[in-house]
Length: 395
Image (cartoon, rainbow, N blue to C red; front, side, top):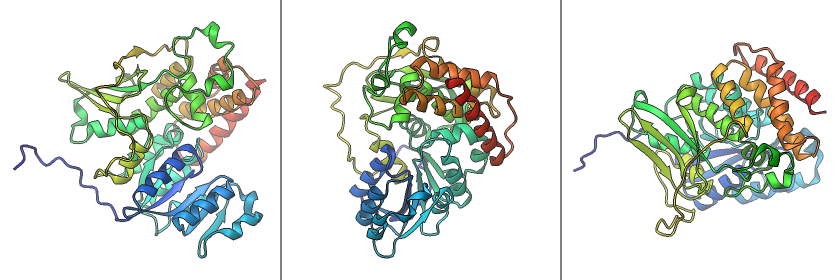
C-alpha cells in the first residue's frame, strides 16, 4: 500500500527508443551518444546529424549502426570518407536533410542539440510529426516559442537544459497555478564579481574557461556574459507558461542546485545533482522512468557549503536585455538572439571586445521594429535583418 495518490506521468515510450541525434558532434550531442552507449537495450540511435564533421559521423554511424546520417553542410557530399559509412546507411545533405531526420517513421524521439536559431526547423518538424522532442536548443524556443509551444502535447517535449530539466522534475505532479516563483540557478561564469572596468580587458580564452560545465564555445561565451541565463529565462517563460516577472536568477557557484520552484504556500522544491549534462539527457530519454545513474554521484557529506547570490544585471547587461526582450515579446527575442549570435562569434574571432557583445545586442534591439510573431517565414526574415544590422555595429 502507498500513501501517495497516483500522480505519476503516463507518457508511453517505444522500447528500445529509436532516437535521432541532431547536432551529434557538439557537446550535448556527444554526451547524448554516451548515454545511448550505456543503455543499448533501451536506446537505439537510428539517425544522426552533424554540420560537416564527416569523420565523426562515419565513426558514430558505424558504432551505433545508424540507418540515416545527415550533413547540414552540403559541400561535404563528395568527401571520400563517406564511402566508409555502414552498409545500408543513407546519407543526405543540406539543412532540409537535417529537418527530414526529425520526421522519419523509424524515429520515436528527436534529441535537438543543434546550436543556434537553426534548430527551430527540426524542432517544429518533430512536433508536427508527433515525435518525442528532447530539447537542448534553447535559441529556437526563444525565437519561435510562440509558434512551437501551442503545438506541443503533454509529455511530448522534455527539456534537456539542466535548469529546465530541474524545473520540469520539480513540477511533476504539481498544479502550475500554485507556482509563486521559479528560480533558475547559474554558476556566475568565469567573471563573477568582476566590475565593468575589469571586463573591458578580458579575452575570449578567459571567457571560455568556465568554472563548472564542459560546453561548446558559443554557449560558454553566453555563460560568461550571462546571456545564456537570459535566454533560459525566456525559454522557461515558454516551456512552463510562466510570466517573466515570476522568473528569478540565483547565482549558485557550486552548481549543485540546478533550479528551484517556489510555491504559493512558501514551500520550495529543488533538483540537485552532479554537474554532468548526461543527467538531464538521460532523464529526457528515460522519461517517464528513471534508469541507473551513469554519472558520478555527489558525496553530500563532502560537498562545499551551498550558497546563493544576486545576479548583477547592471554589470552583466545582457541578462537585463534578455529579460526586457522576454517581457516585450513578439519578434524582439528573435532580434536579440540573432544579434547575440553575431556578437558572440565576433568576440571569439577577436573582432570586438567582451563588453561590445552587450553594446551590439542593445543597438540592434533599439534599431529594430518589433512585430507580432506570425509564422516561420517572418522569423527567418527578422533573423536575417537583425544579423545584418548587428554586423554593421560590430565594426
